[in-house]
Structures are given as structure tokens and as C-alpha cells.
Image (cartoon, rainbow, N blue to C red):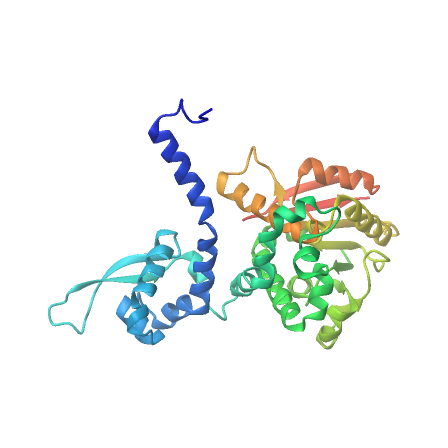
Length: 362
């Protein structure tokens, strides 16, 4: 039986294009990595004006045989919105000849080294071969009972792998810190959620970037970064009047507090583990007579309301969480977790960008 016998040729070719588009999609990631390794956005930024291909390859000191490679990279990245191709006039040219040059877009501005909202650490970690190559084994992962993708590809779970590889742990912490800077933007319009609190525990807070942001916003709020001992030990010297680091395991206990912050934590765990974490959160805030709360910053999948591109990144992140057997969740899935953990109510506030702020009440 010829499955496609009833299809028109243009329909078949359209299907082929769709398959090839996804088959080669990994090259989008590799071109992004290529661009970051060459520091092209930073070069253009330091150039202080759009840069021609000749100027770029001169700064990069590209050998003649690879000039076309850089040209093709820039064409690809420009097509995908990382650079604008603009026309400039060369002031040193007597004929004032028009030339094409590359200018930064908002996406490549986020890839300039040393800037406040730089996403280079995020890209470097998730495009590191030790992370990205794991997804070649998704088929095997599907048929293996209980094992995470990391356990299949690396022989150990994600967290143990990080603890045994200090350089990758540093890269991971830096990636989470760069994402927290983006969250800083999103929290500006929702700072009221922290008002009236005397203390907050940032569970799984890593190097404390998000807590530092909150402690700066609210100098009288006592912020505690709570993470595994090997994570926080190197940051204990960063303690300040209202920011401190405590080592421990969130599955055993969470320090008593007015509020618990979980930024990108629940998506790392399956439903059973999430309920355990949330119960520990509830225990930590239950003695607050004014009404404690858990503050969650995470993705909330909403295929019906979100535009296609936003849903696409959330669904890709959902696949990414196979590395730890975690998942991204819809509102209904979050609600089920909250009720099972003994919480009574919740509110969801979509933040600017990809994130949502979820406030959960005991």
C-alpha cells in the first residue's frame, strides 16, 4: 500500500520541508554556540557601529579558507533574527561606496559579554556536549524504567554529576544566575508579593542571585539561600546584613520562614517528589500566623492562550526536563500538586516573557 498515493506532489514536498526543518534544527543551536565562541556580538558592540564582513574577519583573524564559513554563519544568524543587515557608507572610501554591514538586534544584545542581562552562561551550559549529547538517547530512555536521561548518558544523576565536576557545576550556577537576571525584569511589576514579609527562604537558590535581587529591593527582608552544602559552601562569604546561605536538603527540612521561594525548582522533579517538596514548604511557613506563602517562578504551559512561539519554547523545555525526569506543567497539573501537598489556594500571575509567578497559600 502506498500511503501517500492520494497526496498531491506539493503536499508531499511540504511535508518533506517540515521534516527537514526539524531534522536540521540542531544546527540552529550549533550556530548560536559558534557565534558565542567567536564572541561576535561582543565584537560588534565594541566596534560601536555596524560591522562589515571584512572588518569582522579581520578582527577574528580568520584564515582565508574559512572566510566563507563566517559569511554563511552571519547569513544564517541574520535570517534567524540575531543580526540586522544594514547598508552603510564607508567614510574612508572616496567613492562613498555602499556596503552591507551587520548590526545587533535585541537577541544578540543579550549575547554581549559583561552586560547585566547577558545570556551567554545559559547558552554555554545547555549547549555543552555533556548536556546536549544526552538527548541522543531519548529513545533508550523511553524504554528504561525509572532511569533519568542523565543516568543513562552519564552513568549518574544530574545533581551528582554536577557535584563531581566542579567546572560544570560552576557553569550551571552561572547559567541559573543569568536567568535570574531576566527574572529581575519580570519581578519589577510584581514586587508587592514580597511586601510585608520579614523572611524568605530561596530553596535551591544556588549562588543567591535571585535572593540578592530581592534583598536589594527589600533591605529589611531577611533572605536565606538554602541549597545543598556543596553548593552553598563557596558562597558563605557572601553573607550580608539581610542575606545568608544555609546548607541542607529540601527533602528533609526547610528553615522556618514567612515565605518560601521556588524558582525553577519544581520542574526538576516528578509529581511525587514535588508533593514532598511542597509539604516541606508548607511545614516551613505554617507557623506564620499572618499567613505564609510559597512563591513559585516557573513555566506554566497554556497551549490555548499562549502564542505559538511561546508554547514551543515551553514544550521544548518540557522535553529538556527528561534529563532529570522532571517536567513543565499546566495550571491543572500545578493545582493537583498544591492540593495533594495540603495547600488551600493559589494565584497565577503571568510575568513578562516566558515565566509565571505562582503564589500558593496554606
